[in-house]
Figure 1 (cartoon, rainbow, N blue to C red):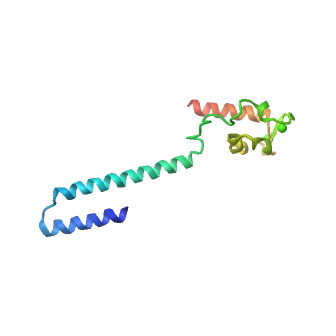
Figure 2 (figure 1 turned 45 degrees about the vertical axis):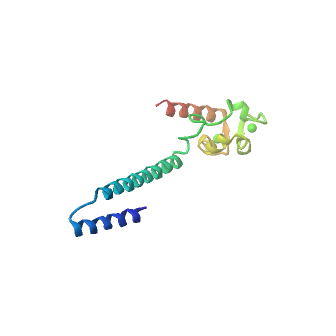
Figure 3 (figure 1 turned 120 degrees about the horizontal axis):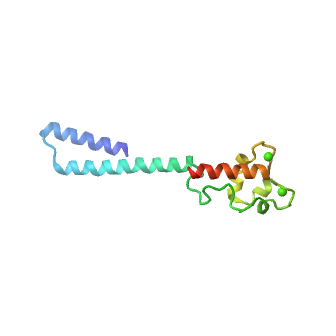
Length: 125
Ligand SMILES: [Ca+2]
Ligand SMILES: [Ca+2]
């Protein structure tokens, strides 16, 4: 893209140097090229932002799990969510490490509630 632009620029510079005149059609071409260039830059930035803000575009935005409650996630009823239990919930398997505040590999009800509160506060802003 930049090469095309540079090429056009040189071509125009050569024309201008030779004729001391810039054909209007070249100006229009430049505008089009610029538009495309700017568009590509914006699209690139948007893609970067989307991948950087992992939760930005998530349909479960503002939530830590797709499931509604801690009990839904705690399949074996031992009052903690293991990594494999979290694996049943696509969203929660992504947020698990963050929610497991003490890093013991299990999410307790307290950790779950704390993370939910934090996330709600973040999105409320
Ligand atoms: Ca469990
Ligand atoms: Ca934990």
